[in-house]
Structures are given as structure tokens and as C-alpha cells.
Length: 341
Image (cartoon, rainbow, N blue to C red; front, side, top):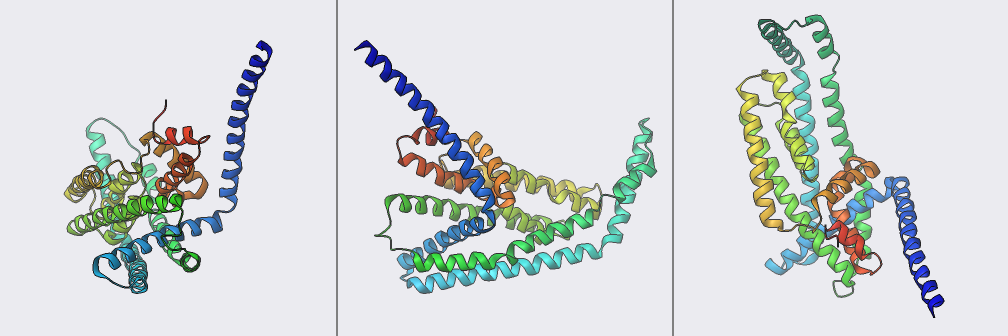
């Protein structure tokens, strides 16, 4: 009997080790799969999220205003296409306007450098003006802005594949009664998160556009659009979008009240909308631990780049919902939620 008990304990111990090893190998294989299939899989995931949003909007209009489902879907699709086209147009126009004023901005930059050198000399600090001028002239700020705008436009030019996936998903989607509890739970939770996040991001982008327009920024529309996108990245995105207008305003006006007032107003907007309104509307959000969210943000950014960072929270939430469904993987779901026993 003692030998049987010892052998059973050894088997249980080895089984636990085997499970951990299998999970590690599965995670490595899944990561490799995500990396090598990103060209096709990433547009499919984006298309599925768009499908959930359009389906939720159509269902809401059908329940609230008795709009037929196909008319609700058609309206939401047209609204999405119009928003994309207008975004491309306004972003391109703002970039072109900013580049046309390159000479004036270069003069402002030179005046600011001269002021910094004079101020440093009064404090007893000697700076080499030639080295500083060469450094700033080689920064290629305008080339960076062109590249940034090109990356934004490229996101929309690759939308054809996403649209095709959306059509195929709608054609193959089942009715609400035929969906499993797992699929319904995922769609309900992710759709609610995306709707609130899009609304909050639009509010933040609108506040950013109004603020930058009041201070006379050349790239107000482009920076507002980038703010809308970055707001989907938790913690890091709002911080980056707050300081992003700083170099643009610096090139336009130098170190004056335009830059300082814009930073104060943008910080207030992000704090009120992100920490008060979004927290109130989302509640506990996706039931994810903040530290885990940052870790998953880094992981998805390494796997799928900037789009992975934008989709990190809903993707991690889907993984948590699936892991909660099965007993062997439930401890991993508890770790994602911060419930470590």
C-alpha cells in the first residue's frame, strides 16, 4: 500500500510538471504561429472586431428604433467608410500644410537655440552653437512627420483585405440562438468594451482637436486622429498623445504660452476623460490586472507591432475568457485577472 501511495504521488507530481511543460511549449508554438501569420491573421482579427461593432450597432437600432437589420448594417458600414475617407483627406491636408511652412519653423528653431545658448552663458555654462545647430539640422523632423503620415495612410490603404474578411464573416455568421455560450460571452464583453472605448477616444480626440485649434497648431487634425488611435493603448497611449504635440508647437512658436497652455489643457482632458469618465462607464473593465495589461501590451506589440498594442486589451480578454472555460487552464485566467491564490 505504501509503495502504491508513493508511486501515485510521484505520478501526480510528474503530471503537474508535464502540464507546465506542455503549456510552455504550446505558448511558444502559438507565439510563432501569430508572428508568421500576422499578414493574414491580423486583418482577420480586426475584421472580426469590426463585425462585432457593426452587429452590435445594428442590433441596437433594431431594438431601439425597429430598423431592419440589413439597413442598420448598411448604415454603420457607410458611416465607417466615410470616417475613414475623411480621416485620410484631413490628415494628408494637415501634413502638406505643415511641410509648406518648413522655412518659418526652421527660423523659430534657430531663434530658440540662440536663446538657450544665451541663457546658458548667463548661468556660466558654455555651449558650442555649431554642434547644436548641426545636431538639430540633422534630426530630419519633417521626414519623421512625413513617415508618420505615410504609416497612417497605409493603414487605410490595406483596408481592402479587412473589408473582404468582414463580408465573409457576415456571410458565415450564425444567429444569436445558434451561437455557443462562449462565443456569445466573448462578443458581448468585447463589443461593450469597444463601444465605450471608441466613444471615449472620440471625446479625447475632439478635446485635443479643439485645444490645438485654439492655440493655432498646424497639425491639429492629424494629432487628434493619432490621439484617437493611441487612446486604445492602455496607460502608455494617453501619455504619448499628451506630449506628442510638443515638438510641433515648439517648431511653430518656440517656448511660449502656446506650448505651455496646450500641455496643461491636454493633460486635464486626458485625466478627466481617462480617469473619471472611462472608469465610471467601464467599471472593472475587462477584469484584467493592470500589471498583466502592461505585460500583455509588450507581448502583443512585439508580435504584431503597433496594431498589436492597439488590440492588446481585447485580445487578452478573449484569451482570459477561453482559459476560464477549462479547468486545467483556469489558474492562468486567474493570473490574468490578478487573482493569484
